[in-house]
Image 1: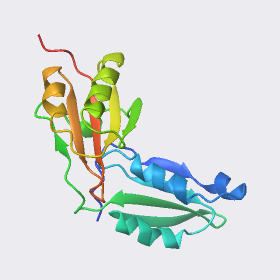
Image 2: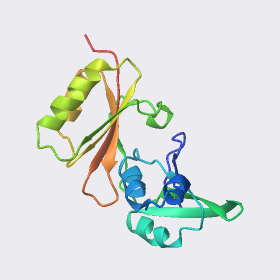
Image 3: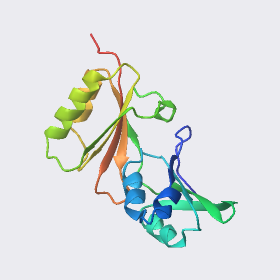
Amino acid sequence: MSNISPGIAPKVLDVRPILQSGGEPFQEIMQAVQALAPGQGLKLVAPFRPQPLFRVMEGRGFDHEAREIESGHWEVLFTPQKDAAPVEISVDADRPETWPDPSFHLDLSDLDPPEPMVRILAAMEKLDAGDVLFAVLSREPLFLFPELTKRGHQWAGNFDETGSAYRILVRVGQAKA
């Protein structure tokens, strides 16, 4: 069974145009998986049943449901498995599954502390209250959490299926007086 968070729509990736132009979609699929928010699924549309991908995605912590949609084309919904890393949330976070989709994405996985924290806090200053930022980091940002709370922001995050990247959603709040 899956561990998809209610209210978070799956990311949709249609690989048919890539294949039609003679390209190989595997890299784009893996990039899409890496960019998923905690608990988010991936809906893949392909011109065939992508059987070899099922085992790859299972190894990354995803279950799948495949269905034929039209003239041999397939839609596959990959959802996080129940035993995937639990999502941690800030004490004041009100139902992260109802937050809007992220309007800002950062891949900070190649940076050493404190640079990811500096960049996330700087990006938060440019967003409006209620906006959501998504970031990928190389480790859990323990020193970032109290800074976000102090500034009135909410967060939810977890490690990816491999345990090698930490994914965090941060919702802009009102600064506390």
